[in-house]
Image (cartoon, rainbow, N blue to C red; front, top):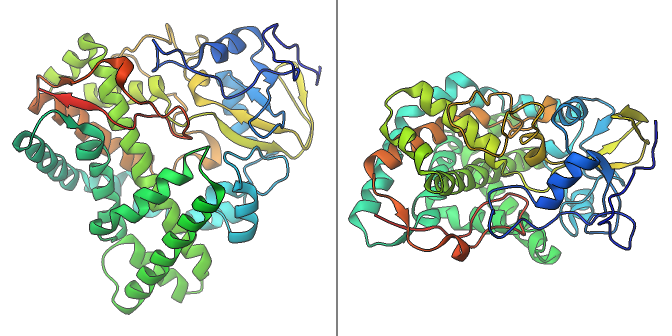
Length: 413
């Protein structure tokens, strides 16, 4: 076992490869070439993170899953070795609190349990008719409006925002506030002060909304969260942070998957044809899982910190070391997925780790699957001639984000 990794020749003068790495302009849907090279040559290695720290980068599927499920690995963003995903994040979480996905058990499990039931498979499936109605309404608006149109603004971001507002009981008219907060929170280069101010604005808004739900509860998740405050199960601060996480995560990741998935299918017309022409829900479900695997939009990797020494893959990760676990390489591991760089919506990709793995896997994955299945089974059938209104090299990708996607997607038909 070794705790001194062999570094490829392309390592920088610092002694470790810089990470994140740029994607190839001609292949923006694929992981960075340098990242794929590391996966082949040194699947476990140290890299130089943006803040100068040197966490371990874990690129293989089996190691990825093993570590995400290992209780010796911490998700606590206030841990001094936890790689901060943006400037000021650790300090902000220490001063102002953090979402439960950035905590360890037992606190993580306690807070997560308070909102698990509304995101069960049964509850998500019960929302399918409402999601279908929303999708159809947005497509009606697309067809009645001018073209070309930005699919991100008019459809991809609008749909999950409508859905999560319906689930939480948040007025859709207030979406501008949480869209702004989301934009700042997932931008690695965002000004820390601006991000902190946006954080406090959104928490203040949610605080007022909790007061409204306490005074006049409804049939929505925010009312359930408010009731848990009255029952003594959640503090006011915990309730605000839970609501904030659900509101932000509930629209941003799914919105990026809708837009990026559409772009991927437009770049693979043979795969798009299968999706467009089928009326088999099983085919659509497989397509969703494959697109989740292929795109792996949670960018730059899940950050973690080692609490104890761990031997894995011929290396010793020492207690106090930071780790980064990128899903985009785990989901492109040829040991698990044959021809991993090929988009094949007929493959069984259900073992992917796009929603992470272990105790911190995505709480909203069942709802996200319903939304994506409805979108992919409806959009291309109702607009069969949908196509890009610009060239691929003109599309602005979110290379600077913690969630990968496109800022805009001009389309026409």
